[in-house]
Image 1 (cartoon, rainbow, N blue to C red):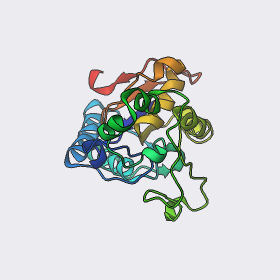
Image 2: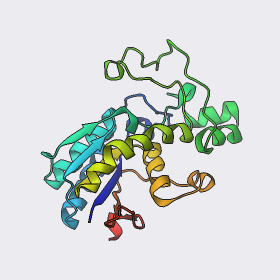
Image 3: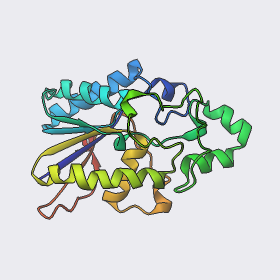
Image 4: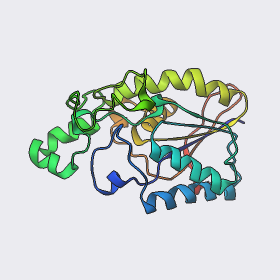
Length: 228
């Protein structure tokens, strides 16, 4: 039975500082390292051992993957990194303190930017401190200047269909180490969650989510591995 493991990266430095992160590359905190390691330990203890791995191009997700795989004794498995698993791009909000942004723009507007399905934040200005145009990892990649969850889904799902689902269908146990919004995009699709309801779904850091697929590649109900 093919099995899919979803892990949101452990706490990052900007999670801790309550800042909008998006595509900006931020490292894990000590707590984030501990969360990633604990995720891998749980995989080992439950006997859910991945055979193929996918992650984004962002340090916090890559490190979470490696720490989890090391703790699970699976650091040797093949892994693929792709920008389409990156976090949602927060545009002009990137780097801003969330509380200060609420005070400046109001709770309602910030809630719309953060939680609406299809309203993106203001675009990131070219040449700003968080412009990634010169980042070598994105050479030749169409870097967005802002994204809603809807736009994030529009890049995540084609990649899922083309690159990840065929691997899963071949019988592999796949782990995806990614981000709150790229994983929400997948969960929305796999669990059939409506545009309205997905806005309320939180993906906790460092907690493996499992989908078991049947022979027809239909996913069962998602569950947290800690509850299995």
